[in-house]
Image (tube, rainbow, N blue to C red; front, side):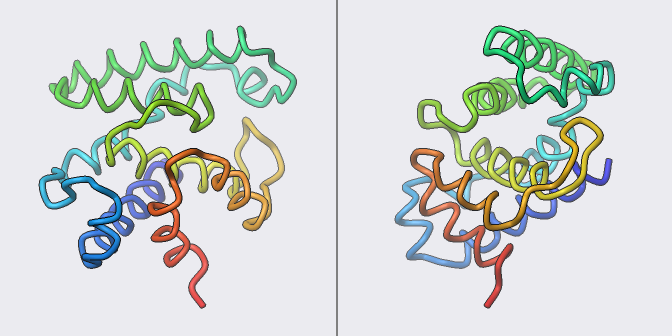
Length: 168
């Protein structure tokens, strides 16, 4: 739960920073004022709901091939979509599908909604910089930032994220 709470706080912080900067919100070419803050928080809190039933050894396997990675991602997607639907949040299924596409492709996917990018980037940041049972030792912040900078079309969003993660 701590990870999901952190993702929610980071995503909401990013959204607020974007909304408060005309320059950034115009550069992003997204309608940030129309984003439903409640839906952003729901997606952030619930994005990993399907992980509870996955073997931590599988999640931690750094040598897993693409086929295994895809199988695990598909199982997580299916479990999480089912749970979110049971909660009456079917309106979030498209963003959740985008999120898992983002996750499976390790950030390298077709342009997605701002909500997906916000949750995807902060999820990656927190997952890599925090110790987790399924990935072992935490990454350094600089190593994590380098990895996130490899994500296409993320530059403007991550410039905002850096303000929050690495204040000067």
